[in-house]
Each structure stands twice: as structure tokens, then as C-alpha cells.
Image (cartoon, rainbow, N blue to C red; front, top):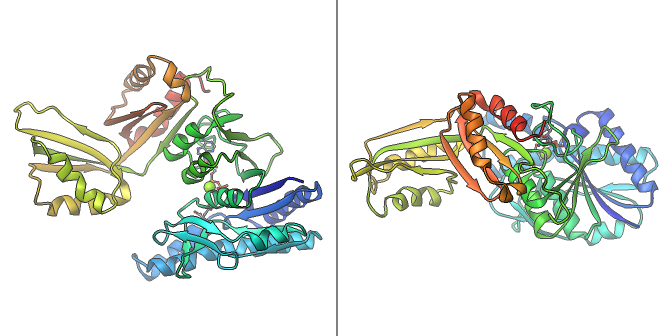
Length: 402
Ligand code: ADP
Ligand code: ASP
Ligand code: MG
């Protein structure tokens, strides 16, 4: 008997018909003799709708209450799917965060699952299907928490780990992980197998088909993941340890995100400690700095420093820089109409010339590179937001991914 965690995303449970369709998939799995834990997201668009409602009350709606509000999305799908299963004569029962309980730590809306009591669920699996909510947990003080957007993937991996499941299947609205977003790049190809490292880079750099913290946990505990479609029977993508993967291509995928902003400090004093003085207060305010470029000063006295941050942090960052007495600069500029385009591939390690090929291709299309960052298996550039899709298409083609 195999123990499976099946996670269904928002589109998969977006309508009553779809919930009934999911109930059929679960029923089939159950009849095949498997022990099934189903993790559900809120119906598509529900979480956004709830956020908008809160903003009608206040832009800075209380964070504790926001988590209470957002967790209702997953509560609805838990009950509807369980009801649909019972109607199909499948024994099923739902549990919410506090009933299990799913223990989290960290701030509201950005908590992490650290433990859960799996006894009740494990016991029930001998009789029927357990339906549980993604995205939500409960703090040690008993407050309802949520674990970040797209967090149901991380919930599924946490259930798989703590319930010692044999497999964790992520059912979604595409056939698997593609070489780029198939809804934007129609020539993108489905990837049959991908390593945890590459998937982690892709998802952190914008491929939202898997949430990055879910991939990170799966990698840490060696939980193989399968991403597959709710709507077709096609084979999906297996995400697992990298041995056995054929790196015949240098690049596995192209990802992009539009949530960055770029700040430039012009005419900063060029002396030891200046970078530390700029970035220390940002770090204290939990602002994540991604790329940093420092120009070589021509007069040996001043320099320009450019760095990127999340777009949501732009105002806060500018405020912090303004009141920072430890740094002097002539001017500050920012650009929030930028995007980050990245190529990812474990094969890059052994292929020379990938960097040059990427820069040449962008230059040929008159795309200006505003900042660059690299790691062993990824290369990211910041470019004008307008040029995002043409850059992604171009890179997809020149790295033989079409
Ligand atoms: P779910 O609601 O099932 O969690 P998401 O919307 O979070 O689904 O993720 C699936 C979406 O991810 C797809 O519809 C697709 O547009 C997008 N996506 C972005 N990059 C990729 C990629 N490389 N491969 C597959 N899908 C991708
Ligand atoms: N419902 C949550 C969201 O929309 C969690 C999820 O769907 O994974 O972000
Ligand atoms: Mg998702």
C-alpha cells in the first residue's frame, strides 16, 4: 500500500465542476488501494479577492486578522472536496490548521511550518481519505497563520515529510515543469526530469509552477516531487536528486520575474566601510538586496552604486537611505519598470561561453543589460520590463529549448 500526498492548486479546484473532477481523481487513487492525503488550495482568485476586501477596510489591514481572513479560502475547498468525495461513497474527512494542529513559526503572512501532529491523520488513513488545507497553520500562541503566497506547495511537502509519504504529487493547470512558462512561451517544452537545484533556481527566479520553499524542503529531505496536470493524463515532471540526469543541454530553462526595482546612488564617497554602511540598515529592516554593482571611480573619490531589491520594498528602502546619516551621495535614482530574466541549467557548469552567448543574443536585439548576477547554474540580468518577453523568447531559442 502506497501513501500519497496529492496537492491540488487553485485552478484545479476553481469551480464546482473541477472540484468534482478532483474528487474523481482522488476516488480512483483510493480504489487503487493507496492511502491518500489531499492538500488543497483556495479556489482560483479567492485569495486575491480576500486581500482586496481587506484593503477596502485599510491598506495596512491588521496582519493577524488578514491571516484569519485568508485562511478561509482553503477552508472552503477542504469542505467542498470532502463533501464531493463522500457523495462518491469515498470515506473522507477534513481537518483545519488548528484541528491537526499545523504548527508554524515566524511572522504573520510569512510563517514556516515547523511541525504537526500527524497521529489523528495517520490513524484515519486506515479508513479513508484525509483532506487538509494548504497555506495555513497555527502559531504556538494559537493564532492562525499563513505561509506566503503559493504556500500550498510547501504545505504539501511538509505533510509528505511528516507523514512519511511515499510520493508527493503536485496537480496543477499545466502538464508539468516547462523550459519556460508555457502560457507565455508556447514553444516551451515539458521537462521530464529536473534536479532539485535547477528547480529551486527556476522557482526562485519566477517559475511559479512550484513554490521555492517547497522545493527547498523537498531537496533537504530528499522527497521526490511530481508535477502533473489535473486536466490531462499526461506524464508530468519528476523533481529529484540530480544523479541520472542527462545534461546534454547547457540551459534547462528560462525564467523571469517582474517584482524587482533598481536603485542607484550617484557620487557616493569611495572609502572602506561605505557599502557596509549602506546595506546594514537595509538588512536590519529585512530588505533583501539581490544584485549589487559598483562602478570604478574615475576621480578615486566617489563612485556610483546600483543595487536591486523587491519592488514592494522600494519606498521603505528610499526612506531608509534618506535618513541614513552614515552615507553621503550626490543623487539617488530608481527604476521600478525593470524585470529579471534568467537562464538556469546544471549543464552550464561544463559548457564554456554561455555568458557570452546570452549577452550577444540580447545585444543583437538591442536589449540593454542593467545589472547581472551569476551562480554556478544560473545567470540573471535586469532589463527594461517592456523587453521581458522578447528577451525570454530569444534566449529560449538560442539555447535550443524551442
Ligand atoms: P497552482 O494554482 O496549481 O498552484 P500556479 O498558478 O501556482 O498553479 O502555477 C502554475 C502556473 O505556473 C502555470 O499556469 C504557468 O503559467 C506558470 N509557470 C511559470 N513558469 C512555468 C514553467 N517553467 N513551467 C510550467 N509552468 C510555469
Ligand atoms: N491560496 C494561496 C495563494 O493563492 C496558497 C496557494 O494557492 O498555494 O497564494
Ligand atoms: Mg502554485
